[in-house]
Length: 268
Image 1 (cartoon, rainbow, N blue to C red):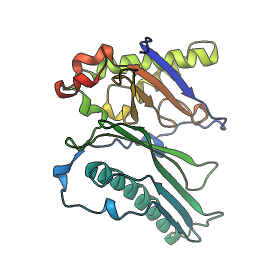
Image 2 (cartoon, rainbow, N blue to C red):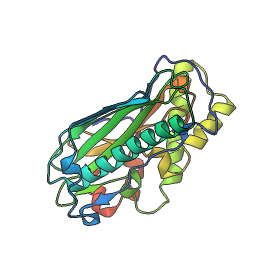
Image 3 (cartoon, rainbow, N blue to C red):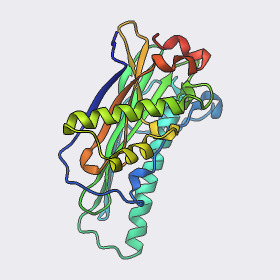
Image 4 (tube, rainbow, N blue to C red):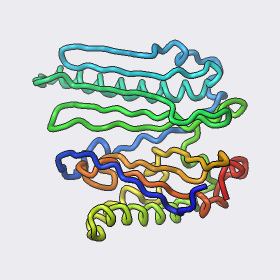
């Protein structure tokens, strides 16, 4: 079992520095909503989806890769396909609108998405979406999503807020996340973040479940969840050059906030 209350990791790709603006598309988070089999028990849309979807025109090209999902995992299949459809339709719609407005495509816009499992157990499955979107400009933007799934009989995709009872957890969890970010950047830079950086942390890791939408449960040796790994989108808590900071928040301090039905999955 891991003993550190906060285990901290940071992904720092070597990218050119960019400044945050109010129009940055990555500031719009895409939390995964909970989906249960009761939402649409007869849906077969996800079952018909091909493992690889490719499309190319003069204006854009896209490639979407899906890992295989069991036919009985209905809620997971629907959640993944709904998210992929939203990403695809938004991207294609933007490209077509730009074409109609006379935009000159120096090179095709590009969307690449890949969904693959990062944890597979009889009682818990985690799929992660990774990819990138390029719509002109100096660089593309990485895309990120997670799907945390309880197989049947639950057949439920859990957003991070679904683990907790009420809203009281978000203030202390946010404080822990802010402390983790400060420590990560202090260790990286050899000095504490300045006031502007800390303000940015507070905006992107404030007490709102949407700020922690990309989360992955981490298991101890006994198979219990001891932490959530949280990955922040580019621009969410730092500049593009800082990549996608990742922290691990130990759940023991927040165990009393966990839904009673899920508490036995959390390590003490």
